[in-house]
Length: 112
Image 1: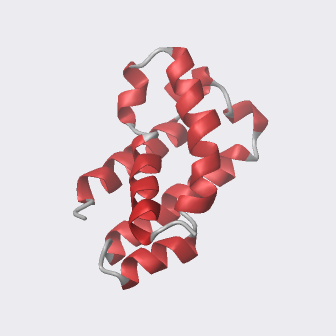
Image 2: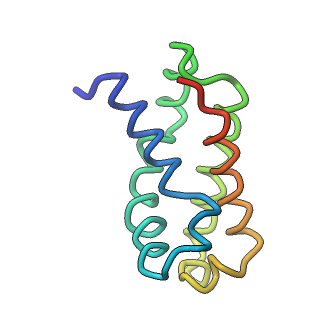
């Protein structure tokens, strides 16, 4: 079984896979981070049960919990729309920019 500390490190890595910095990266990096890494990692490491465990252990606060749930839900909503799953849309869509900004916000709030 994966330790709590390792789960938290994976949570942080998941948040770091997504962010506004991606808009300055090449298309392959955007594609890899969002559609290969983040899309898989978000299922486990931003799952509400995992987040609540971090909250109970004092590793995150309620603000990080809420923003992480919002990030996960926003991504999963976009993932259901095939036309939204391409690099050009990531660069131009307000919905994608909101997801990237949400990840930035969470990154700035992390303290553990």
